Image 1 (cartoon, one colour):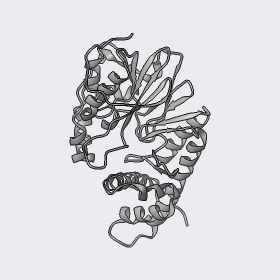
Image 2 (spheres, rainbow, N blue to C red):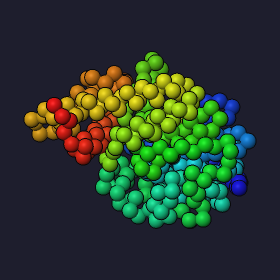
Image 3 (cartoon, one colour):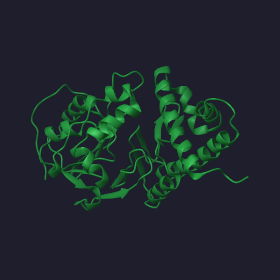
Image 4 (cartoon, one colour):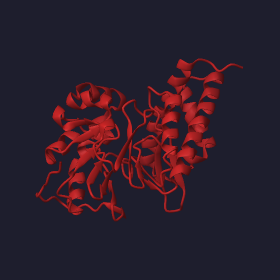
Length: 315
């Protein structure tokens, strides 16, 4: 089912990737939150919006859709229900009434009543959650279990790891994988930055299984939730898989031998020195580095909790 919109908003140019794919940047006024958040628009025989970003960026998202002359959508596909990917879903549901909204079945209750999701986000993210904006509820009749996707051109893949309610979607040559493949930033120099998105509660084996499921699809192009596209689909997934295993080794080594007071800070210092995929950190401006320091800490804490639950590695 599709719907139409006719109202006009200030034009904001999205990025044309190909004739059927558009990246929509969702920069915020929050320091460091440029070239970080994005949504995706696929315009083929049907038109799909993949993720909607936080509530605070909905005006920018709607303006970008207007600039692309999008007056109808067939569906919104949510990779997961974290605020930076789904926080604006209440406003977008109102802007495009009647269309289905697909997400993981475990996420549906939290979109119907987002109070626990909002409180948890405030506890975890603090001022960042406030800057993202609160999430508004969605009517139950709008929400569809992604595993029951009704369109043959959309293949949902359940990919827990970054969150237990994570779904990736393959459409034509594109794999929209949210944060299953980490956070990716490329620079004009060709330098790339790739950071695991592994907040608590994290289970490495589950994350690896999800990556392996995506590798088996042999995607030509992978579309990140943060940020942009890579045409080295399978290679980047293999690279991230190895990165997760490297992080496990480094963080376990630090935890086992640590005698200081801040093991997370020690892990971050060592990873920034030893993980070549984090080298792009030093190409970021200072506000972006501060953003990444905070997310690096959270990702390390995910590994720390996993390793504590797993128990000490035998000598």
